Image 1: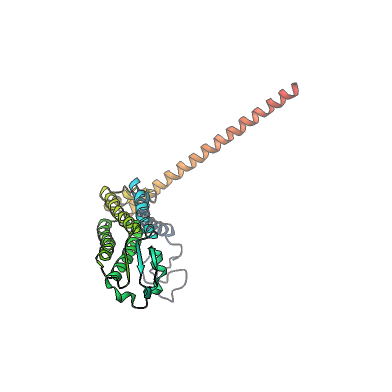
Image 2: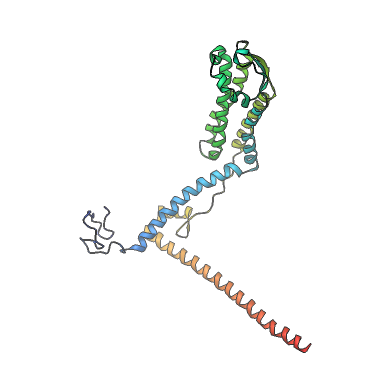
Length: 291
């Protein structure tokens, strides 16, 4: 259970009545305004920290022209795999396929790949395929990590993910070239894999350029009781809670007065326009009667 807001005595489960059994204070309404202000202060500080995350997320995607370019270069590499990545001829025991094979073609042939000893017949070919899948997985991880591109660990994270992406992508290519076995297929690389490697390299280069130049993060101004939150944090170092609360009431009253003055001015202007319109109407009617 909670404590009494007036005397601070601990309340038991049996102390369910509205008044404190120790001091008789009305627990529900005692110092209600101050307690609501305290809760509002906590909520507004929490909102400030959450807003900072939202501002960094927004800047990561559209904080600069290069950031927008990075979204494009981070998104398109995998589409190169829709083109033929190898021109090959499968041995008859593995289906006898012949022609250009894209990643989609390989994916559709998973049932064939998983049986008849395909994976064990050519270990280098299997390693090349696994490295290619791993590079696609890292591409997906990198794309989602763009949301944290303005965080403190963004550069270290980019170094790790981009390095692994390049190693797996170029590793898949190198291992395939090193494979001289014809136990499963005979063939050579095609345009798709070269385009995939080029786009992955471009993606990494653009990513590091953006991180090196940095992205300006424009934080939305937040307030705590009418006081800018940066000023509020400084006040906490030098002022008592009571002095801060008095300043908050002063600022809030000033904001309320300003809002009321604005509304009054708008109403006065609207009334003046209506009066002017009402004065013009009879003159027009009188001119029509004379006519």
